Image 1 (cartoon, rainbow, N blue to C red):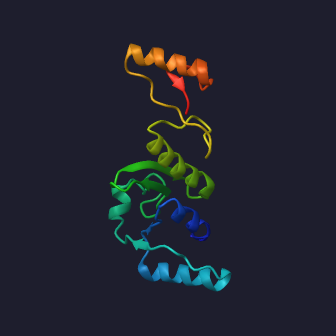
Image 2 (cartoon, rainbow, N blue to C red):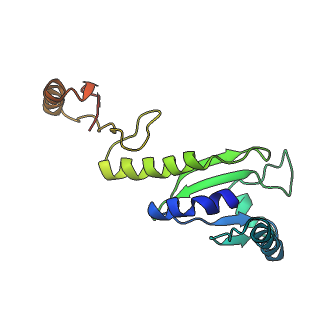
Length: 161
């Protein structure tokens, strides 16, 4: 909660909203939020849904029955503005989430969509993206000429913008 709250501004700048989900009660959430505030001065800045019966958690595969019937695993879902799940990260109960990677994923999804391309392995912001491969032989020839001229790829099927 604290780490996501500290990063909330980054997510907002990416036009991304945060939402928590827990199978604990609203009273428990209020106690957590209040305790965090009393001990750190940090106000949790996003809503937390109380999913007491675990219905939502089960639908999203967040309860690992082989570990516990009542404890959720630490999932992160990136859901786009059309309601489509674009990324699922599952962390074991004893491993914290890595916020910079979650932010990088959001940035990569947005960049790939805007550029109509794909981000390569180890992509970080401000690096080029892979452009879609041409679909015709003429497009292949044009792409090879572009690569020769601009030195922006390895082959017609792997070039960058």
